[in-house]
Structures are given as C-alpha cells and as structure tokens.
Image 1 (tube, rainbow, N blue to C red):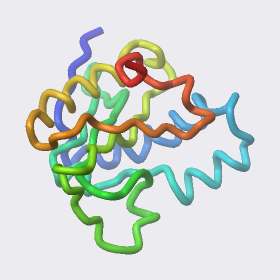
Image 2: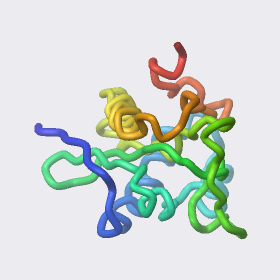
Image 3: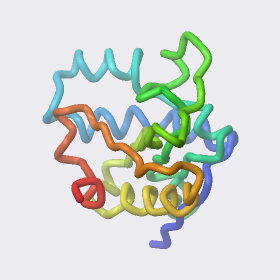
Length: 153
C-alpha cells in the first residue's frame, strides 16, 4: 500500500476530525480511562487550524485516505485544538524558543509503522533555518511510550 506525506490543507479538516477520536480512543485505551479520553476529546484533542494555516502540519495519506498527521508549531501554544484556544496564538521567538512538535495522531491500523517519524522528518526538513533551536517534544507523560526514536536522542 502506497503511503506519502504532504502538507495538510483546509480540505483535510473533515478527515482529521474523523481520525483524531479514532486514534485517541484506540491508542490511548491502555493509558487513560474512557472518561478521561472522552474529556480529552472534548477539551484538548482536536484540529488546530493555525498549524494548517502556518504550513507546518502534515498528513500521511494511503490510498487517498488520511491515516496519520502531525507537525510543528512556531507559536506559543503547547497543545490542543481550536476548541481550547481563548486568545491570540502568538509567535515564538526563534532566537530563544524551540519550535514545538505538535498534534500527532495515527489511525490504529497504521500504528507503529513509522508515521510519526515520517511526519516529523517532513517537519524538520521544512522547518530548516526558520528556528535557531531544535524542536521540543512534550508528550503527555503517560503517552511517552509513543515518543518517536528521533525525539529520544
């Protein structure tokens, strides 16, 4: 099955809105209770359209279906979708702030196949010299087992 990565576009939002709860429910089930997962899907996990608008978010596509997503941010927000933003999402200062690795979700059928690594490689290549510091990775502590190999170096 062919897999490729590309920048996410506004047309991808419905597919991302469908992917995120499937990913969170299946891949977080051993880490969180159903109530915690439900609450996270309402209040935290969701599409951050600013990442798409900034051109820093990627989708993994297999047979015209989005099976994964993730990217980086040049903004101060650490996590969360549009539903939790209350104020302006200010830019980081690349002279002192590390870019932020953000919002990785993978369809359970594609888990542990390197999608996060592929998306992060795209993000690191595109990020290039836009920020002077290496990106920071801050997974929820229970989700640290999903930390990509490159983030542990």
